[in-house]
Image (tube, rainbow, N blue to C red; front, side, top):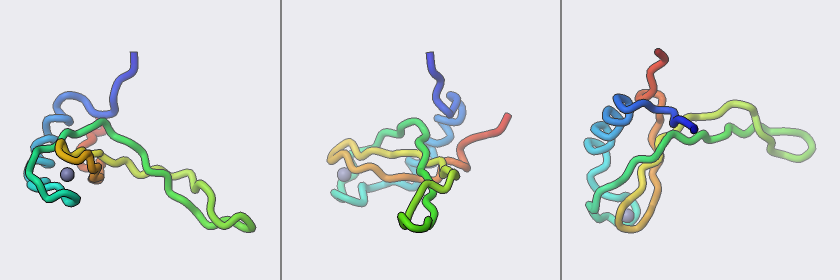
Amino acid sequence: MTLGVMNYEEQQKALQAVQRKYSRCPNCGIAAGAEIGDVVGLPVMERTIPSGVGLGGQVIPALPVTCKNCGHISLFSAKEFITSD
Ligand SMILES: [Zn+2]
């Protein structure tokens, strides 16, 4: 069994915050509602020589919000929704 990053209380806090910030989809413009997913990680890239770009080792936690109409995914910073206790 795997557990998501956020507990129930954090998910509810995130859902309330998203409902305040996400009134319409930035892609289709329709207010069809959105679903929040579990936290994902965006790898931070770094410049390398000679290949140009490589994984930097840091990850930005992001909360995906998916439009129920078109499926467009918006990402919000997840740091404000995750508690450290
Ligand atoms: Zn949409």
